[in-house]
Image 1 (cartoon, rainbow, N blue to C red):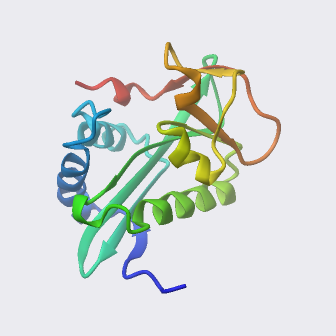
Image 2: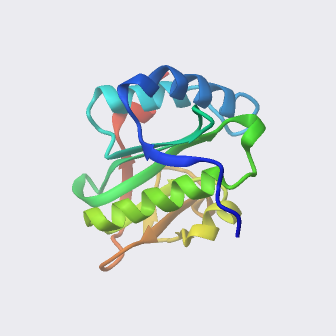
Length: 170
């Protein structure tokens, strides 16, 4: 397997304008996008609610970003996180950057003791990482097949999942 042309590292303060631009560009044409994805990352960061924020750098430019933040289940906190947003520069999509960012992020969460990671998204895509729909977990009125979880350790929790209030930014 060829070595990737990019490296993955934690975001730095100098990366924030590039992350904003990248996220806006990545979601511009996405049919499911709300247009608030860059604002969500900014609000999570400002609230100190980014557990993990990684960038992929290629040739000195940021070409990908992934964020993980805590979630609650039935109003309780635990070692549970949500994945997203994940963004890849449009001209570099389908090159393995998003996959590498997600895999690296999940590996780091595993080392930090996270038990469950949830995601709202395409079941075919996120299923590649082991995410599965679980009728025991709910997220509002989202169709259950689009809300998925990955059990990293321990028993799977059950209940209503809530993301950080930053996900409600307009």
